[in-house]
Structures are given as structure tokens and as C-alpha cells.
Length: 181
Ligand SMILES: [Fe+2]
Image 1 (cartoon, rainbow, N blue to C red):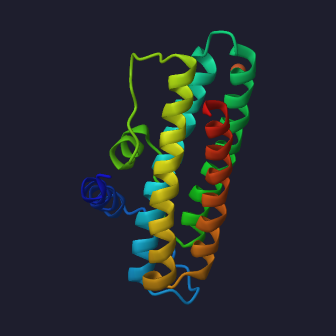
Image 2 (cartoon, rainbow, N blue to C red):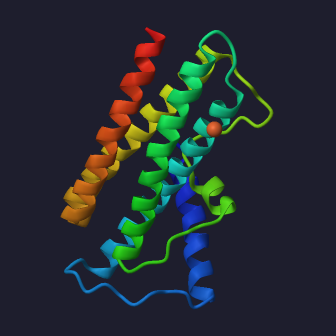
């Protein structure tokens, strides 16, 4: 994934926050500031991925058609509703570390590892395949981030938090895979 590119974008975002004097009161929770910086960077990219996947799932909920219309319309609704809850938890985890949470479509678009396809309306099976691929990308990114949080950042709270989210994505991916097999 284009991690280098989204890290450069993140640096721009942080400068924006500093310039506008939006840095929050530090959280005195036993994690060094530079580790909190690194953790905020990871969580901001996770947030961008979750919002992008939420939007893609919602687009497919609106546009699915064909013989399994109602089944998939409802499946996608169930998944985007669960993603919405994850989004809020990720955003608030950043606040709990004492940092500001990004919240514009521009920033999400710059940071995400996932690709959107404006103007494209895939067939049922291709929607399922695309969402499965995205969940698998998110799982792989989370797995790397969990390792970094545990071994380098040494933030047990975020390690545990991201592990919980990864398991939820494994469930989403399993369900999508079943429709395709
Ligand atoms: Fe709806």
C-alpha cells in the first residue's frame, strides 16, 4: 500500500493542526509523546480506511440490483452500520490519547489505503469481491499496526483495541467470502 504517501499527507495534516493552534492538552498516561505521535498517525490512517470502506459499502447498498437484491441490500446495511460504530471508536481513541481527530473528506481521501471507483456500478458478484478485497487489505494493515503498537510504541490499550477491530473485519470478510464460494 502507499504508506509513504499517506505518511507525507499526515505530516501536512499535523502542521495544519499546529498552525491553527488546535493541539489538545497532553494525556499523562505513561506513553511518551513521540509514541503518541506515532500512534495518532496509525489511528488516523485506520480511521481514513474505515470511513472509505463505510462509504463504499453504503454506495453498494444503494446501487445493488439483481436476483439477490434484498439479501445484499440488507447485508451491506448491516456491515456499514457496524463500520459506523468502529469509525466512532477509532476517532475517540485518538482523543483519548490527547490528540485531535481529523474529520474532513479531503484528509480521509489523502490518507486511505483503499481505492474508490467514482462512476462505476459493479455487478453483484463484483461488489462482493471488491468489498472482500478491501476488508482483507484493512486486516493486513491492522496486523502490521498491531505489531508496531505492541513492540515499538508499547501501547497495550491501542494494541488490544486494534486487535478487536481486526477480528471484526475477519468476520466481515468471512461472510463476504461465503457469498462468493
Ligand atoms: Fe437504506
